[in-house]
Structures are given as C-alpha cells and as structure tokens.
Amino acid sequence: TRTQVGIVGGGPAGLMLSHLLALAGIDSVVVDRRTRWEIENTVRAGILEDDSVRLLVETGVSDRVHREGIAHDGIVLRYGGESHRIDFKGLVGAASWLYPQTDVFVDLANARARDGGDVRFGVARTRVVDVMSDQPGILFTAPDGVEHEVRCDYLVGADGSHSMCRLEVPESLRQHYVREYPFAWFGILTEAPKSAPELIYTHSPRGFALISQRTDTLQRMYFQCDPDEDTDAWSDDRIWSELQARVAGPDGLTLHEGPITSKTVLRFRSFVAEPMRHGRLLLAGDAAHTVPPTGAKGLNLALADVRVLAELLERTFAGQDVLDEYGPRALARVWKAQHFSYWMTSMLHTHPEANAFDLRRQLGELNAVTTSTAGSTYLAESYTGWPTGR
Ligand code: DHB
Image 1 (cartoon, rainbow, N blue to C red):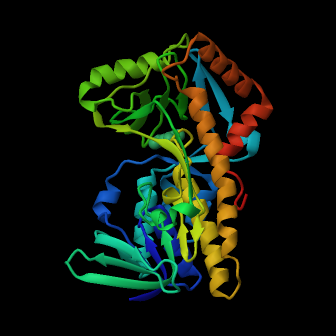
Image 2: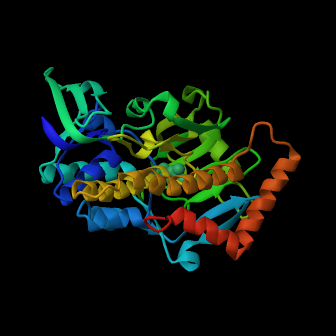
Image 3: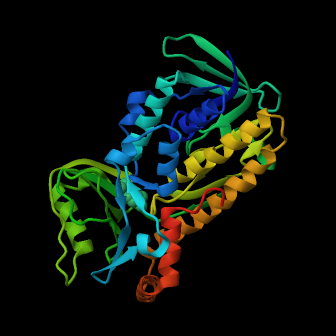
C-alpha cells in the first residue's frame, strides 16, 4: 500500500491527525496493535481543555462532547480541611470540560469510519523501516495473518508512552528528559452520586486525593499511594475510610459512597523525548512526552501536537519547507505543560521524605495561590489551556 502519511498508533493523537489530514485532502493509514475493544475499555482521564473541545466540534468529529460533556467553570483546591475555589470563568473567561477521554477515542474512531479512513486495529508484529529514506515503511501482520507493507512520504509515531518509533531516532541524536515520582495514584470508579459540583484537588497530611466525576451516577476518584501498592489489599471499606480521611475538615465534607467497580494503580512520570522530528519521522503525543496526571494535560497536549503537525504537513505537501518548525512549536507548549503538571503534582502530593517544614511550606504555597489573583490566574490559564500555537 502507498499512502502520504503512515501513522503508528490509533489512539486520540493518531486518529485526530488522520482526521485533520483527510480534511486537507491528504491520505493516511493508521495501524495499532490494540483492538478497538481494548482501547475503548481502558479507563482514562476525564478533562478536556476548551480548545480541545473546540477542535473536536469545529472539525466535525463530535457534537456529542457539547451534548454530554459538562463545562466546569472552576475547580476546588482543598487543604487544611477547607475548600478554596479557583474561578476559571471569572479569572480567564474559560472552562474545562468533563468528558471521558475514552469517549474522545470513540468519537474519533467513529468519525474515521464514517469518512472512510484507513484504520487497522489489532495488527501484530509492527515494524517501521527506512526512516531516513524518502519512502519510509510500516510492516505489520493483519488480524487475519496476512503480512502488509505500507510505504509513505512521512511516518508519524503516535504510539504512546512505550513508543517504538521514538527509538528510531539514533541514540547519538536524541535526548530523553525524565523525572520520576516516589508515589502513584490509586484510581477507582464508584456507582454513587456526585459529592460536589466541581473537581476537588485535596492536599492532606495523609497524601493527595482527587474527587472527580463521570456521570450523575458514576464517579472517578484517586488517592496518592505507593507505586507498588497492591489493589487486592484494599477492600471497599478501607478505600472509603482513606478517601474520607483525606477530604475531612471542619466544614464536614463527606463523600457519597457506593460500590467500587474498578480499582487500578496508575504509575506516572514526567518525560520528554527530543527532537520530535528525525528526517521523515515525526513523534506526537505520549510517544514524545508524558506528564504526571495532576491537571489532566496528557490528551490535551497530544491534540495540540497533531493540530500543529497537520498544519505543517499540509504546507509541506503544498511545497513549503516548514517541517523544521514542528519540534520547536510543539515543545514550547510541551515544556509549559511539563512545568504545570510537575508544579500541581509537587504542590499537592506528600513526598515520603517530607518533614514538618515541607508540609507547612506546601500550605504556604497553596495559600499564596488561592489568595492571590496573580497566582490563581496562572493556575486557571494553565488548567484551561494556553491559546493554540503558544
Ligand atoms: C481526572 C484525571 C486527572 O488527572 C485530573 O487532573 C482530573 C480529572 C479524571 O480522570 O477525571
């Protein structure tokens, strides 16, 4: 098969890129070793920036996000047992959207199917070859066992945090920047009503907790845990008492409890692979960078990458020599998001080696942020997303 752009990875980055290229009249083939069912049944984060929602709606992927997504005009930072609201609407005139990222995937996969896009899920033995030639290729085995070869003008690695494409950049030319954290998130889904109208990011001496939502009857919550925590050691009762203890305060906030239908430990790190372009190979989304989950920047960054990449590929096919702009343009936003995610994480989590000073300092920082218009405006503009292209 011949195509203009070969895309490894059929998650939100790969599918959105394929969709945007199709709108520009550029054809692409997307391959992913996971089946559609596997991707649809992985629990992901639930927050979209205003610009991510706009991209989905304005390019004709989804109007469901407007119907089923819920705009939140702020979040709550809770510390010392008290809630402090950050008013996104009032501070920066923007909102964040509660819309499960799994639904973003479903909308994108449906849009590609509707428009006749070439997307192959469930392939095996994927290899990329001849990245530095002018005809790079993707080799893979289809679910029926037949071997395929796709040759393309440009090859995009949108193959997630365990990317094999990024290893095609020679070691002597690449830099991997990493920060590990000595904690993870214990994530649950529970069949219960909402405990509060907006998300609650909680700092407590027992560690971080995040009270998020999915629907009126299904809620998502997380609490900081050891990276090696065993979910089997946590009964529903034990989980609820830990969550209740972390959010407890003089205002009497209590969470509505219900049956817990999913329990997972999510490990994370901060990671950036540079450069994002090597010859005709381009990296996008988690393949090039991952962030800790606090602030839910991951998917939003992936969409911002492919928005830039689609524009530059379109201009490249029109004869302009602009592909060198991709890395610098994408990375400017990536490093801002790296800082924001790192900052939110370190401000709200308890470091295992923290002493009494560190705890008091965090409370001072939280106080500085929530009582200052400058401080809370920084949080609000970062959380709701920087304007496209910046
Ligand atoms: C969710 C996840 C996040 O990392 C976050 O910052 C907010 C919400 C979620 O899954 O709902």
